[in-house]
Image (cartoon, rainbow, N blue to C red; front, side):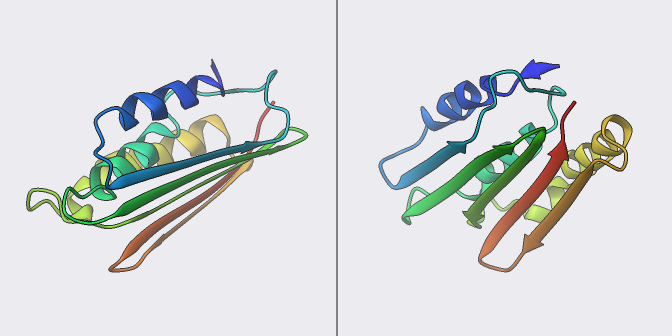
Length: 131
């Protein structure tokens, strides 16, 4: 298990490679100091946002939000979809499917995952009851 605050460092590291055309909005609400989350649960969602939500030609925004209420973590991430080197979002399904499997193994019955994809945007909502 890793402390939740380490994810901020990972997001900042991803942001180092961005141009001024991409804006990352990162918000955290609530007390998370004592909470931990299983490693690599959120990484596929964050990686996809930086992979498909970034464009060197167009203004882009990635919105990441954590909210902690008691032992519950609410994670949302939203980004526009920009084709990247001819790859399509569907071709990356392995990481998302692995994230779903890990959630089921590590937090069975204690999570809700909703993924909404339109031709223009991608939105993930994940609620986990943390121990």
